[in-house]
Image 1 (cartoon, rainbow, N blue to C red):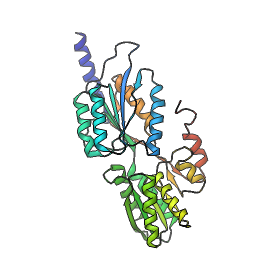
Image 2 (image 1 turned 90 degrees about the horizontal axis):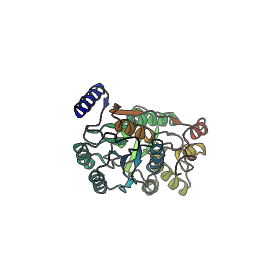
Image 3 (image 1 turned 90 degrees about the vertical axis):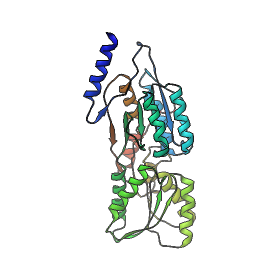
Image 4 (image 1 turned 135 degrees about the vertical axis):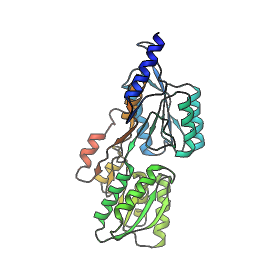
Length: 325
């Protein structure tokens, strides 16, 4: 009778969660006040500052829920095969919940489906997978961010000009959306993207690519980089060539080497805060573990960083007194 009541409750909860929210397919049941739910988190690449900060913040926010336990975060080093193996290892460990920041959508799809088949609730962060079996997706509106970056470029180049674009991993949906949004915004404003290159979100790749572009001698009026690390990498090459070219980035981390400080000190023209999703991920897992409805897709807002608001935004998003402790 007790099991039958539990089954009815689960069905009722998932029914109530329809139209914009989701339940775990088979959420774990609590075994008492001392029960801890074990979470596995598969990160795509710790070498990216955004992802390193996401890790620190997730560790902090999970600790705010005493009944959650985060296993050591795995690092795929931007290798999809490695990440698939790491996700499968979490499945074999029978974790209570799985969080995934996919390196690429297609290779991770089957692994996420395996977790779903094992009745493990999955929360996907930032980058999509080609299945909707997960419990919740959390990320920003990358098309809108790209479009706002394009509008910033139009404002910076009122008479038009030449732009070069440093792109993330080409198969990543954020890259696709940030590219399309930017191009749609600059269309019809006499702005030409004269060069574009996949720099895979990495500073060193961006520096090398920018050096090659500068060596060609073409006139470059602005750099659009799909994250701050690539924008700052491009600026290293620009400074090395003795030139001054404004750069637009995305991420807006409130760390000493992040995008907000870079705007504040004039290294970047502007950037856009892309939330790490860490707080929402911890809250979503907590709800799932207690059979509460969660939104199937959580879209987080962004804020443009300018010299006028950089100091205030840094203070608002700074977690240096909390993370890493």
